[in-house]
Image (cartoon, rainbow, N blue to C red; front, side):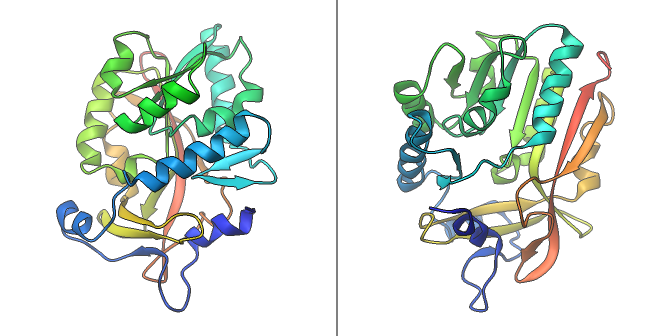
Length: 269
């Protein structure tokens, strides 16, 4: 499969079949109209694709799609290196919603022993089971919750890449995230909307990727960042490295965008 296949996720055709749609009043209503993110086909396609990457038969995977050339998340790489240099030691990294280690394999060549001590994915239970069976090693590990991970490892750096917008109660989660007091937070590929309030949509995936649909938030940027003002400073902000995500369409209109933030705990800034 090639890159053009994935870009269709961001493209709304004239029939309005795939992409982001609607303005739903509640998660429950949106969820009733979707197949859900826990559909078995998503895990199976992701497992197959990442096994190809792990074995060296493919270069790069994102959202279960194999690519013939890597697209590097250079802001993430930069801030990982910056954080490790600031700590003067390798980091223990928590990758929230990190699938089966997609980002780990994407940036693995930059994660020398001076940068990464461990890469810990927090995911849904069936991903954790699959991850432990097929992908876990001395560096890459899998956990079912942030708390479970923290019971074993003291985390320095938390990565949240295209994950928060798929939570039922994202603002409740963000408040909890702040309460942990992590040193470094990096949000990547997070969806925002040019509207005065958050917007809940349904994302429909093209069947050539996999047949699925699920609720998807677009955040008001000011409200999103309000969770962090008291305890964190913004160390950097950046656009998505994925082609086509700088402008995202809802109902065919260019009202959304994908963006990232690197946040530093004020106690360590």
